[in-house]
Image 1 (tube, chains in turn brown, cyan):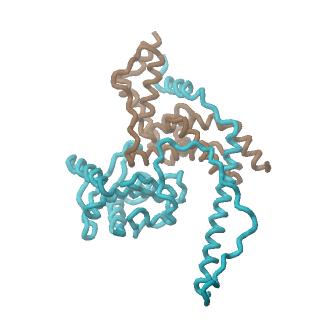
Image 2 (cartoon, chains in turn blue, purple):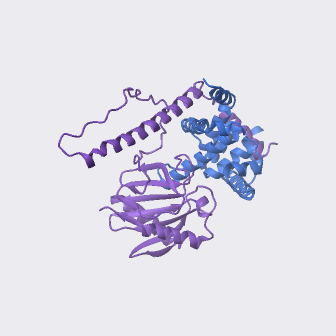
Image 3 (tube, rainbow over the protein chains, first blue to last red):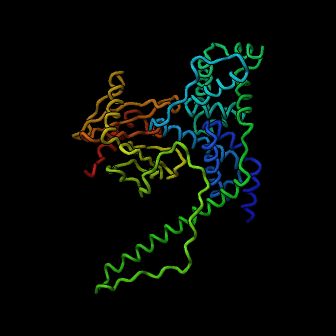
Length: 170
Length: 241
């Protein structure tokens, strides 16, 4: 292996699992997440000499998230993939039920809103960093996050999810 | 008591805890990149050989004068082993469309400046589609997408237009001597402006929808400019039958 390949290999070894998890949360499918990650890493590898001098992880993350949004949009336009919807009468008796309910609601979000939630609340990116990844304004990130959180609350069928969570823990 | 944000964070962490990158990921990425480079070189070689092979058509003076050009003695590499799992939901593509200006039965006479074929397409039989963007990257955002409905699928396009018309959304437009319907489609992609779409009537057997991504549409000064450009693309659409 060349020095560049070694450096690339070290980066992948250190960060690939985290990036795979981002991909999974962005697209909601394990197989597609692996494909998204590999595609993003191939693109990164092709541009490695340029990317390595900056921080490569934001570059890969940006490719993954935008590719996931792009694919989801195409599917929406093609109307070949039924949109997953949260169950109408979810059971909320346990913590596990609540987890499934929220994950289903997360998957049902429009892809850009889902990406905002993943980047903000799982990757802990700031609003400005999230805007940079998605190529939009901070204002858009704020509005998308607000809409997404409202939908998640609505999907749970409660004005305030905290009460449900409290019950689940009770 | 945790907030929704805290709860989401914990749930996302739990949901992904079992996921780990494959140990051979680096090798797969590097191998795939090399394979793409090799295929690119072979494509370039094939193009140059095609040019060499075509040249005798102009200079040959006697039957049998054309001979196969001498090709490199280097044997072709073995077929690549594709160990990338196929996407479960991606439909077949239309293949290599070159600049993408001709696909299926449709020819695209006009596209805005700066767009390249995205190398992405989908063939759904009586529906097919492709897209253009800035960098020609199949994994990137699309700027313009054209979706063709033929045969039985025409009804699907007509139903969509009818639904918008019934809701009072969109408007009829004249596209030369043809008709079209302009609307901003909400495809659920981002919860924002939606997708400006013009569906063109190309006769009994064909409808064509031209779509701008919401991001691309923002490049234009206003909705009127977007509509104008959609109509211009529609005007340039022709069919080969």
